Length: 380
Image (cartoon, rainbow, N blue to C red; front, side, top):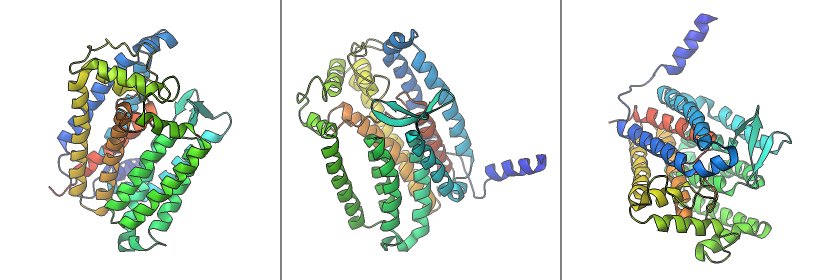
């Protein structure tokens, strides 16, 4: 028994392919974003944490637990040969979709901000959709690589792709979690294109998405209000547009140099979700254009390092997976920041590696661990 367990561990961590040093610039960039995120979360959440729990560091302490698990996941996935996940991709997807369906089970599902996106197990909250992002990417990368030239065929390419994406989209719409769905759908289209998918197929999916959103807007008018707020922040200053108005006040008052770390005024119950999707507004207020702009540049540089890992990956699976992972994280960052700056509709998605959320930071660091492993096997 002991010998079998030892052999299993050796099989998991043993490398079948030539490896070299990982991309250190990629690892350093990830580390800088994470540390900066902890500093800003400590400041942004201090007031609301004290008001709710009597402890200014409540959210920071919980984030450190999620970060510790995330760091362990990062090192684990960075050590395991990424090719091994091809074999388990479908099973991981089924398991994560099963977890996603549990949000609808009475007693397990938990409603937060009007969305049934959480499950509570043994007093701990888990957001399954964060893990669906990673498992779906693993599955898509494995499946798209296996299609090869058959990807152009409807029955072997776009047809099954739409069905699988539709199942996940349906579950997310029922919650509803439009923000996460937008990330999953956009990332899926990127990897489909990277795998050689036809432009007309992608345009077809986009058209279906627009029609679905139009139907959703009729059923839930508040979704359309987000677009109206983007066009006119004064459309509804006390309701739909309140968060974006307070965000713009925070960022504008920060100016070039910021008010100073810890000196935010908007975090005093003016701006909602200061530890979540609004944290970039507090970053802009306290650190100004200099550091908030530097954070954006770090995300862009992260994308560049991920693009290099994809470009020089030794096979199609690694190429598709690398571009999918880095597109997911950086696209989500840009959508979050764009919402805070009112250049995109607000979606409620967190700022990756920065916003409060144990499930989110664990999933992101696990995915980035895989990206680091791909960088260890690149052709240069």
